[in-house]
Image (cartoon, rainbow, N blue to C red):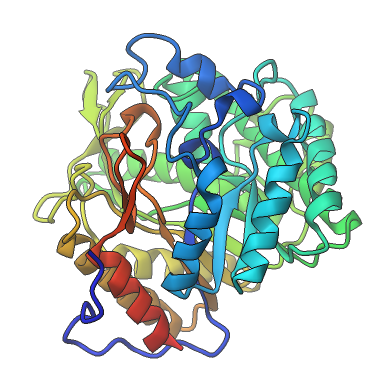
Length: 443
């Protein structure tokens, strides 16, 4: 159970007044109530045998749809300023689907917790396709509907979550929905998601929104060695996973050469980039770990539960000498400092204030001291970046609840709150008590 004496012995540095403390979730991973929404690409994906490691689905998940009041009470007890959740596009497309988010937002406001909706977190409605340009326009229409309904109570909005992972894992490698293995032919999915982001910003502005951001995943890329081939491979990986999704949003341009690979004529891509580069009020960063990258090794590589094909122009290597989470991810808090100071140096005054929209780890057990150590180290690393001059305005832990972890099913537990997936009972972990104390001390 959560304890009140979970703070580490070392005093935590103070954060500025108004710094936003929060936790994050996503609709498909926690809501359940699949029969009360339309189907998504993830429903089709999980229905295929072998796609999810434990054979599970998110049909029930944490049953947050029916238990949201219980979960809002957990948020209130946790004392966080804000709750980042996602709105399910397939649910909004269903009769009465927005009523659920009305109730959730009302409950959050009544509890003194700021609602921070993410408008797309991978659960694309079945029948739509990010390879098709029209999906971006459809997304903007959906965003207008949601903003028109919730905008009187929601001030802070997130357009997309992690288009890099959705492109790479879902469209290039096929290990996430929709399960395509297109490799570099997946680039239209990246461009159309970025275009959807820009159109969503415009739709939100038209609805009166004044606090809009995106949640992009980023991490430092470390060359496996000083060998020129390793350094070249690392630069390409960084271009593909970091700069391809940050540069257009922050500068209105693709890194040199990448724009030529996007769908449409040069004039069409340039016009799209004007939309993609719509000014943001803040920039969301999801951080978990750096990636060590070397030259291709001419063979498939198993890394982080994903098979990387031999034809990729890089190979991902292990980061040695670091503790690993139960997911096998290295624990590298200083990578967050490196990432944020690097972004400041690269983008300068084009970088708006930053919010850490996800940071967390998978560990078993209620007395999850490893999670406490992980979060403690990363919060301190974040503070060091702020001391170095990076304007960071908030920090959200992933996640409030143990949940459906995509292709891993229910085997990975990222929550501050344990969920028994048989009874659906919620039990706060030691890390819940630690984070509650951190929020109090941080203020």
